[in-house]
Length: 92
Image (cartoon, rainbow, N blue to C red; front, side):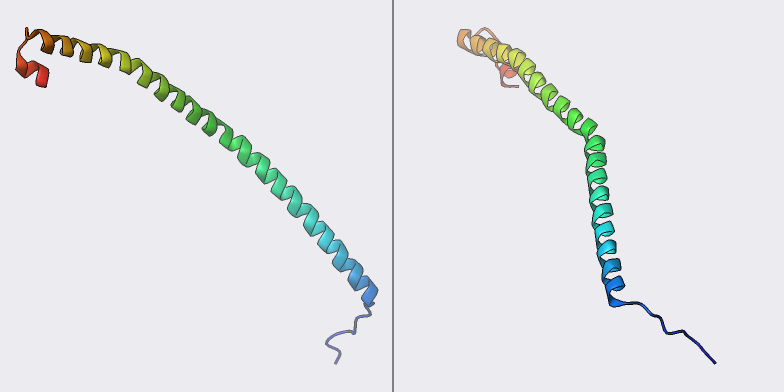
């Protein structure tokens, strides 16, 4: 009873197959890495833009809030200097 047949596979063909397999593996791995890099960058671009917009908003809002706070602080200093106020209101 014959369970297997002895294969005639020369060593040079074996080496050629290994080189071809290695080349194809490198080629497809490089292609996959490049496509993944491009996809991730394209996906994260709106997130980066939103973070930039949020930082601009926070900067602008902080700048816009400084003016009224400075005016209130200045008015309180004037009220304290003139002593024409209720001291309970100024301390709050």
